[in-house]
Length: 240
Image (cartoon, rainbow, N blue to C red; front, side, top):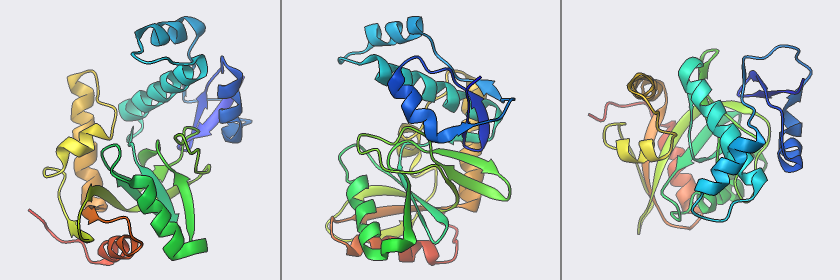
């Protein structure tokens, strides 16, 4: 019985394609019990491909289906959600960067890697999960790490979350979920029912009571990483 530990949860997944089996392998655990089953099947994969607007290979369809099932289950019962972002750990603390496609998340995280060098560990460059567990909120990697496949199997307590926007100068300012709600909603998987939408909004409200939310206008240069980092070290302030 294949069980994989993702976001510190034992999850049963029976891979259909060899590519998915290989992707999941670093998360394998010898657990004999599991919290839920996120497996898909050939019929679901075929249906997903048929509905796709672009050509979609079976393993990519399986990836999307399995990650969606995990994300829904974690929101429903495990105090967490999917959060489309590039995430890294600096000195053991997690930093997440979300932005509209093409804004430059990966370019910005590369600047952090250059500036801080071996103090940085890339967690997940595209599709991490956020969970409330232990003593706070954690960013957790998943086997799905984007086209660049950058990341590793780890979790880290979240220090700050950034909403990236292009700018002519590097400016980082505290912000609120209300001000950034559209982009926060675009970064996650929207629930299909009112009950889970309430859970998601409550999760965000609590998350940003404990984690800094920073609006970052940035240029492609390395100084953007310094400005972003310094903003996260300042005391939490009320931005209402």
